[in-house]
Length: 356
Ligand SMILES: Nc1nc2c(ncn2[C@@H]2O[C@H](COP(=O)(O)OP(=O)(O)OP(=O)(O)O)[C@@H](O)[C@H]2O)c(=O)[nH]1
Ligand SMILES: [Mg+2]
Ligand SMILES: [Zn+2]
Picture 1 (tube, rainbow, N blue to C red):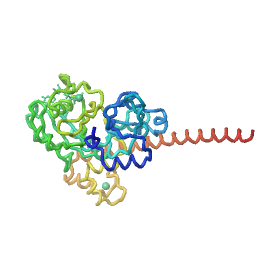
Picture 2 (picture 1 turned 90 degrees about the vertical axis):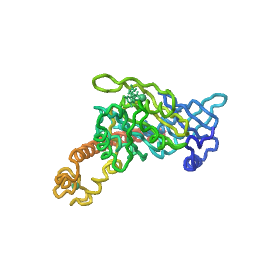
Picture 3 (picture 1 turned 60 degrees about the vertical axis):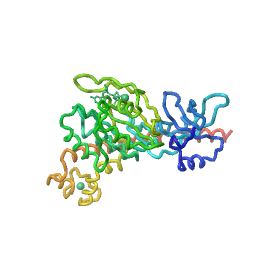
Picture 4 (picture 1 turned 180 degrees about the horizontal axis):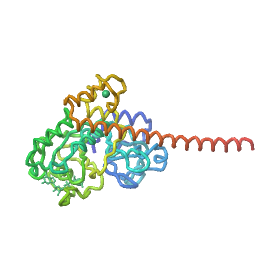
């Protein structure tokens, strides 16, 4: 197996070399299970074992190997297993906030070049949700492309395309139908050998259907959406990196119910470049564009130069981002307190022993 077909390059090679462990071999994570992952290295598939020391060293769940990651692994003699010694630095990532009490990042996929954000052209289409996804993609460093699927169900596609294009800014928006194959040529043209693409979007929008079309045969399960609310059934339940016939690598993901923001400073401005530009004209350098007087952004809304819905969406995302940051700071404080306590405990014990 030639690793360059999986995206191995000079940058990843340098990252591995920097670890100075000549016995550690490179491999890419192609699927994830609860307790193990599947790796592909120069000698093919192996089961990747996540050792306790890696769990221990990881500051959070997000540091553990995820689909798309490059890792350094050592072979277990006589078995098709490897122990993962280190996760190489991620070039890009797609991450969301895990729902729950603590604010924790969940990495959905790593080292992705292009993220296809899929929405269906039916009554589930939602420009605000699209913006949310786009902020995440920008933040993780991948290039977003918007795919409007199920064009065959839409009588007035122009209206939705216009809304999607507004959300995507200068990004690409494609109109597709996995059913009639509309736009598949344009989609295929965005794929490049050894590049990794990832499909994200709500359940039932047709992510797996589109990948099946790209593959040329049915390799992924798809299911009818529920009648009435057009909602999907969460058919895809795991993530896997699949090589396509043309040489591109694709990651299908389970439909996301929630896509909370995770530290999105750059992503927010990447998705709202119009607002970022307007902000230069605000009186206060740190203007939040919410309640300040002499705010160029609010001015533009009042004059009808900036869409009010878009502005409100920006404010909402900004508030959410601030909330995540507060929660994260609190979490960090707790971690530090715990560390300090443990260190005091250890020191105390060492001193006791020293007196013996
Ligand atoms: N009419 C129409 N139906 C489509 C199209 N693409 C997909 N579907 C249907 O939509 C349903 C859901 O498609 P999936 O591909 O399973 O959707 P998904 O995004 O992978 O959903 P999850 O795996 O649950 O996240 C299936 O019944 C598909 O046949 C399309 O372009 N037009
Ligand atoms: Mg699916
Ligand atoms: Zn302002």
